[in-house]
Image 1: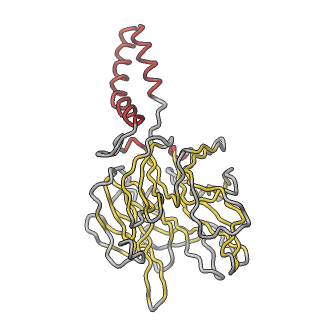
Image 2: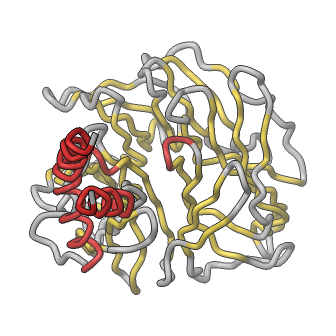
Length: 360
């Protein structure tokens, strides 16, 4: 009986452990950016790569076996952005987009067979933005749109794509739209706002895991030729596709966001932010960001990172799909402990069930 109680207590100790990961890109010093992975409680930060070609916007594959991101063609050639696939330990990096392109914001399709991205091109000396998909098995590319697309995200069922439009100063503002996964049926997610002195840009849309809601970030600012864009307020929302209602999250309006995602399977939000002074010019100075967790039910904000980072972009995934720690990389003591505990968790459960049977 004593053994049985000890095993139950050990199982209870194991159960609450963090069981998910965040991959993120961040500027680590002048001229160098890196991609890192950590537990979603902020522990076990592990470097996957650092590069002078500025890797950014990493996203997990649905099966957790790969990471896709974009980077410059070279430190000297910042006009070309290439999309790169790699294993989750940072190895086997391979370019999947054509040279001489500017491809950004890649994201996997829910079945893992395609990559969705936005691409910048020139036609008759005019800059154009398009949505593309790439079939990973064949490498075949297909253009989905003839209109501007930024920060696209696939719905969990693979049928729709939400995206942010490309703003044109003095004419249109950045807003959120939805289209079919084949590029047709585009329609505004929210009523468009008329252009004016106050700019309201909506960005970083993310489908909820159940496909019923869309998370996004909103920046209200004003523009003047001398100081550029001056922030007036930062807002975070969850839009319900069924009720057509917006829920504003209780994140301070001073928190400027650089990336946002769902976590805890829709119960929480992960976001990177820096607190700035409102109604003052931001300038071109780099800012130090932290990664935070926001609990939707309670409104509680928890800072996950001790170290500050610059220009963070992040993506969350359930750790059940991943190895406990990246291979061939330095593992933290927490990672080693977690690895051992998770490895033997099923064993403890079986022993517990068996002892319970005999005790009865």
